[in-house]
Image (cartoon, rainbow, N blue to C red):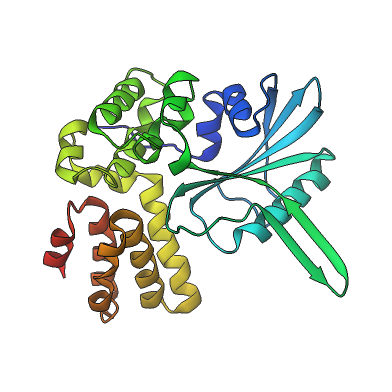
Length: 285
């Protein structure tokens, strides 16, 4: 049985902070310092991490890391606020980075926030890294242990042998072995759940311990508070179906959208994680 997961973004980055900072900035001689407290009143989620960094050319500055399960339309404004609050608190220049995990759109993801109100402009650029565009070899060769649990969704990482190698490396290191539930969760997006279960050699109910599985459930709850609980969970089901099964998954929404029972909707959301095929989900419906 795998250990309970402590997989905050801070934990992931702290595994190899120098290599992480060099990867997200492209600065080869960067050296990281303290991972700072990010309690900026309303910005306090585990996906927000500020790293103090220094390079001979740029001096001391901050790297702002925002790790998102799925990109949302609110992110440009959030990145603007995130950068401004960090710069004001620590009195250092900032380098904001948005890392998107799952691809849910073919549209171009913005890399800046811009507004013009009564002739006054606000502009905030930030770097965007989409994990589905990142070569899987970076995780193994750099090395970047922080990326190992995301191997299945990296470019070229969807095959069984590569996922098995990532699992071997995670289990061989005491600092990394808690990450296997995350690897298993993302493996279900590219392999049949039965094969993932065979590779991991534990019951797939363990996936409910994955922080990203919990993030999907939290999204549904948050949307539910804002829009009515059933509607919020249906929205989360829709994005999860699209992320895992593409347009084929969305075909089920005509049936799911008619369901009003909250417990049934929550069960459908849970089943998406471990479903092998669309047919598995149709059987649930």
